[in-house]
Structure formats: C-alpha cells, structure tokens
Length: 176
Image (tube, rainbow, N blue to C red):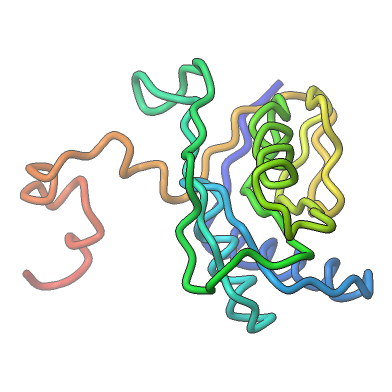
C-alpha cells in the first residue's frame, strides 16, 4: 500500500468537490463545526462558500515524530464560536476519517452537550475503509489504509529556527 501525497491544488479542488456534494444533497444547515487541527482549512473554506458561521472544536489523538503516532483522543470541553449558541443543524467537518474514533466521539459530544442540536452530518475529504463510521459526505473513498501526506505537514517537522534555512522554506523562492 503506497502513501498518498496531496498537493495544494488537489487539496483545494477536493475541498470544492466536498462543498459541491453538500450543496447537491439539498440538506440545509446553520452551523459548521470543524475539528482542529486537520479540519480547520476545510471548515474555513466551507464556511466562506456557504456563508455559514464556523465553530471550532479542538481534539488531539496524534503526536510523536511528525504527528504520526496515534494515542488517546482528547476533546476540548468547549467550542470556539462567534454565534451566541450552536446551530440546530450542524455540518461537522474534518480533513479525513481514519479509524473514525475522532469523528464519532465529537459527533456524540455535540449531540449530547448541546441541547439545541437537532441533526449532525459529517463531511471529510478522505474516508478510509478501516473507519468505524461512514461520513455523510466525502470526496475520496480509500479501500486501503494509506498514510495521507497533506501539503501542510512539512510544518510539523519545522521549528522557528528552520525559517533561517532557505532550503527548508518557501522563502527560498523569493528575495529575502
């Protein structure tokens, strides 16, 4: 099973495809909740496209070298949002569903902790067959379990001093 490498262009195109799938479903929602960190970019883009408020919930289940070691899932107690209260029909967004544990835990958290919640649907770019849950919307179904290398992962291995080395940054492409 080969790793999957994703460029910025592919990432943005897939995010637009996800938005199109949600639109074509005809389902209306009044809040987007993205799972940080991976779902931030997808959630922000969908929030802009649909002009729907964005809320953020932080989780962490990967750590270690380059963020590749799965551990115990931790979910933030509170959401960060600009609305007075969470919407009733929520689109829960992440970049991918791997084991499915994070998506499942966060969905159940939203349904249980917020009385106003009537319905939660889920949306991701990549859905792996090993997942315990099937998202409502997804762009790619992956029957194998590849490690997905997203374009921003390079920053997991960079520290602030790395910015001083032009070979490690995009700054090498421009005058300093």
